[in-house]
Amino acid sequence: MFTGIVEELGEIVSIEALSDSVRMRVRGPLVTSDAQHGASIAVNGVCLTVVDVVGNDQSRCFTADIMAESLQRSSLGVLGVGSPVNLERAAALNSRLGGHIVQGHVDGVGTIRDRQPSENWEVVTISVPRELLRYVVEKGSITIDGVSLTVVGVGDNGVDEDGWLSVSLIPTTLALTTLGSAEIGDPVNLEVDVIAKYVEKQMEWRNS
Image (cartoon, rainbow, N blue to C red; front, side, top):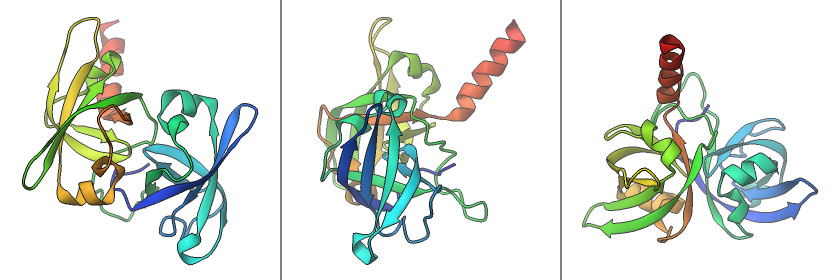
């Protein structure tokens, strides 16, 4: 489990294509400072398992295998060597929950549609796959590329089209995560609030 509070802006060092997966090496000296084989690290919101840790100090990297399912359901497949990525270690039970409950299981991929800068923040609008729209509510939580954010607006474009949501990014988020440099048209990983999905499932059982 994660909280959506990005600890470090890492970088893709290498990508090795395997028969049905990808082996990715990511530089992240902070998140690897206590990482061991089998540890969980979220990369742009996708929970990955550490295979090994190599290097020292600022060059320290971890390797992870990414299965076809993760490549198909997230934006990790479009990353290249040198791409910046948001990194977060799994949450510790004795720490504060700074964001919200994040599983690291991406529900879908959205696209940045608009950016409106202001003096002290920036409003970013992102497309939402229609099947996820029912889980997104104004003032609710959403995870975008691993960043826990509050939804400030949500809209429906019609029965056959994706919807949209908007979030406000403070200077810290703009400076310390990939969302600060993401451009219009870029894909982003979306994870909706898992509580909404559980409530929906229970209501379905109850009604049936």
